[in-house]
Image 1 (cartoon, rainbow, N blue to C red):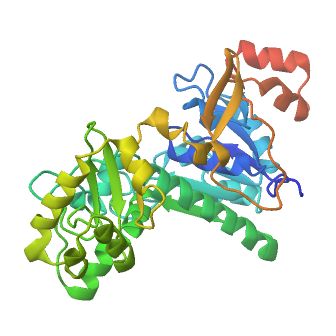
Image 2: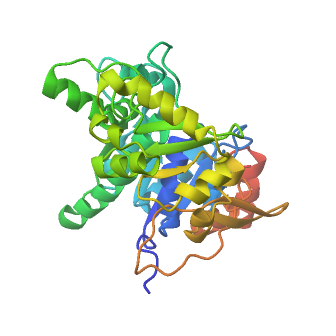
Length: 380
């Protein structure tokens, strides 16, 4: 086994909310030394608790001269800077890409924003639902006769923001090995959401036909790819999209006649009526026992408690126990597994500003200097 692959890299994380912290958590789980920098008495603190795992926490007021001096010294030794401010904020603080690149040419600077660092929407405010709307994603979520439905997970924030940022950061680090120079990683959550809309866009560009809400092959319009209610008012998922999965499902229910009709509009409602009635005949537990091992892409609709108690997620380490000030608590684990990486130890969660003094001592500040900075409100 080898040490975590990113263990030699240092990140300064100025991000808040969800996209940036989720990104830096992925990288911290892979060994990157992530120092989260927040303003003293920041009401957001460390944000979502489990997203602070394996990170260090420092409080620093970047609006003060002393705070900016300290931050500049931290930048000198950093590999990555991550921020999620609106475009222009870092420039007003004196820490925009151009100035930091001149100070530390090896720095990889990643900015996550709603619409990107340029373009006509550069200064617009937004959240996940807005980016999905602009990207043509939200239009196709929901039933044909209803309004667009907001997804229950933050597709643009995490999928289009966090994951794209992690890929961009790692790509820039690899490129730096060749060039010796860092670069700006400009992540727009709108860009990422548009890229995730690949299926609907491909259909439209290839056929010229405009997709319709709730009527596409993977949106519940066909009986082979749908959700069904059980006798005990629970739900099961059927994803028998490929013909051989569909054939297995139909034959299990004794409906060989449905096999060639998978995407036949004329029999769609008839097939739906049959399967809806059939699945209401037994409980979720009974259906899992009967169909859980069949090759039809079948499963339960679990609530959050059931999902994180699922044996597969437990086996895969997606539930981890973390030490906190109030004892051990369970949090979501890392989805990235590397065959040569030694198993990570149980992570701990920092207290806001826990590592401030240690970081300053590492920069050469004496105890009296640190006390004075605290008295001035530069640190918490």
